[in-house]
Image 1 (tube, rainbow, N blue to C red):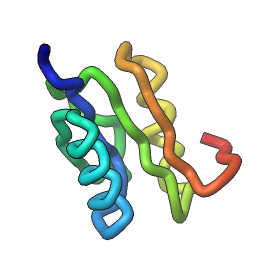
Image 2 (cartoon, one colour; image 1 turned 30 degrees about the vertical axis):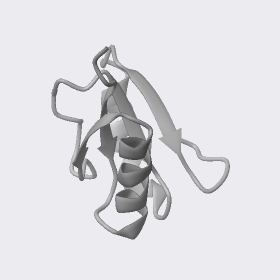
Image 3 (cartoon, rainbow, N blue to C red; image 1 turned 45 degrees about the vertical axis):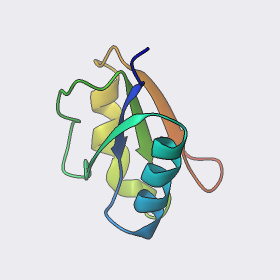
Length: 83
């Protein structure tokens, strides 16, 4: 059985690293990117994990780009988020 391919989109730092480590321990194949500049790039990932902890205003462009993406999306936040 192949591991689930997950693309973690979030700012570089300790929180993203911890999230990546947790997913790897769970058996996922993980790639990471800082997508604050715009729409997520295509990759072999089956699932997008959007880490919006911190300054949520920069994620508006990314969130709009996700409407056209067929992959499943998971959002990690510190609380209710307008994304």
